[in-house]
Length: 277
Image (cartoon, rainbow, N blue to C red; front, side, top):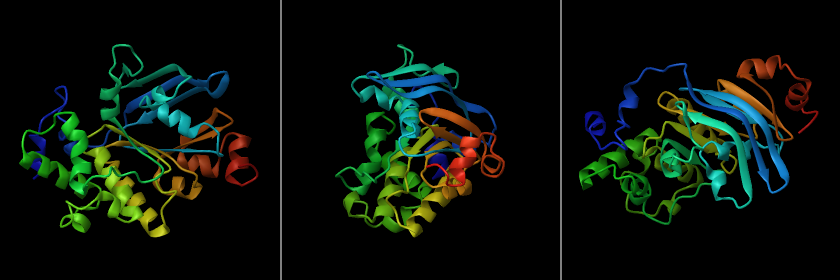
């Protein structure tokens, strides 16, 4: 099936499935410079600058309301849908300004996928949940192509063996953990280059959380992943880099081990030791 997947249609000439053969590279995939966000007169985010390395997981941590999710939504222009929201600064994907007037937000959201806090499968079959994105982007020419996309996506999300005999059943009939893996499979079906995850385990039990964490570790071999998490233990387990946000500011970012064992800012130390939060 691997060769078949590599021969599937591309989006704007990019061979979306060749990436699975690519060796991990420590290169900057996405970067932000002096990013700020205002909702009307309320300043939610101030001058955030950060690099996202290819094939790595970076965790965004900090107290509730500190700007983590606001910043995450900047990375694939989800804030465009919020009335009165104004984003300043610069965000580039492979050197391309994603907020340029020449940039199509739909293309950006295909290249930078997103998984939300609560599982949100479409009210469709498992099969149709996966096919939705590829159909919009014209990635397949036949039923056989869609079959391959569905199997590849569900296998990559660690769900194929559990649902292969239930593909025509509603995605909403799955357990919470399975629904979240279905949402991950749906996100990667169009083969994004970056995956954003906004507290993807917060509504799951410990067993389902462990499966998602294992999946994230496997997926980083093919994708760049950014995850907002309320759990410092989770950040320590799954990420190579960690960024700490507080009151709308990026306080500190670095290797995860360094952030948790020798933070450079007293606010970071206060947060990870429980004195603020």
